[in-house]
Image (tube, rainbow, N blue to C red; front, side, top):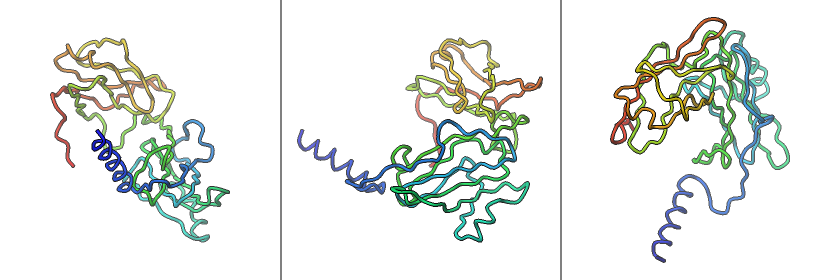
Length: 250
């Protein structure tokens, strides 16, 4: 038993060091200015978020293909207003505070619906990015009435596959939205589904217990919403049950 406990402790110490966390390090997570609740803006507006912390900071945002520009001097800061109609991300230095000497401010100009998602500020020199420990995040909706469902790709009307393993207890249909207060319904092309236990989350999509689909041989669903008299549909999702985890590329 003593040997097992020693091995357990050494394993966790090794994980901590490998991830960049040092045992005994006194550190508080970074904080956001005005971090209460989600942020909601309209398309083509500017999103501005300020983060402060005890170590060097960095930012990440939903669209990984959008390259950020780090501003390093006063002349560059004057350029952070962006070019009208151009979608850009600028990261600038800002004044620190007592106990939080580091500060980074994110500017997203010309925001689009696909910029909806989590914006995360984290300690740059620590490998483990964990909200509440080494990072802090906030969710932002970019309201787009012509694109109520979040589409990061170039086309809609795609059929995506949701793999459900035998160990899964719930199914999540990730039809994300750009407008937080929509009345979204779940439509099944395979016939009616039992609605008990179904829950809607505007940052996650629809979720329901696994047993809802256990007796249905094939399930294809989509999310629907009516906005200003017009009906919009998300991608369609084929829910596939499997005995093991799908082969994922690594």
